[in-house]
Image 1 (tube, helix red, strand yellow):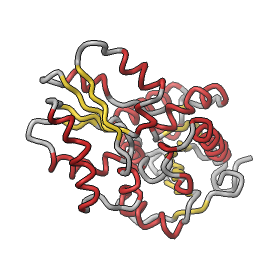
Image 2 (cartoon, rainbow, N blue to C red):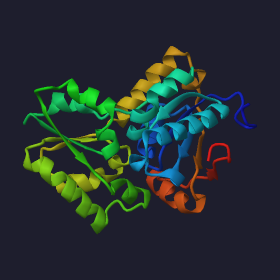
Image 3 (tube, rainbow, N blue to C red):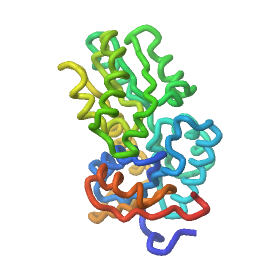
Length: 272
């Protein structure tokens, strides 16, 4: 049953292990400014990257159930780890469009001049069968270098986007990719776009950075058009924010990354 205040309105649900999915939410807002948004930061269980696949799948199901109760007509899994662990299960269970993430290896392959592409991601994403299938599409060219980045999600979750620890971590992870000649860096985690300004400081001129979020928002528009969502034609949008973690702790970082103060609510016990 839909909750009061949401029934009858069309919206899209977006979730991530924490605040990183706001990078995707921002692109959706730019692409579809008239659509209502429901965002869940599953901060109590962040990061997903060090959790078993079955655990991430269970969290994804609980959050999707909640978002559908809120009246969402489509769901964006704004997390590469959750996409790899749960996207097929979600699509098999729910009848609404489910849009997931995928490291932007294909556009990177089209843009590289050196023939070397670097992928920054969590270890869980890089070891997933979904990423193995994606990488197998490019058996010879370009050369795809992968770099797991433990600790970066935690830095973004803490709102530390420019500090010395974050800089040192990024420099350490970028070094082997740049040393091997990578001229395109793929951001394979939704938290990482918030680190893009720092990455630009650390890479030489001419290196490109690719964020898949704009492509996700375009795919969402396409899927909504297919189901004839009326919200595409409205002029007023509303965004609501939820978390499974401490609202007092998460709210300042969420507002920092979203660029505006927000009312952050706690997930009900059934979803938390």
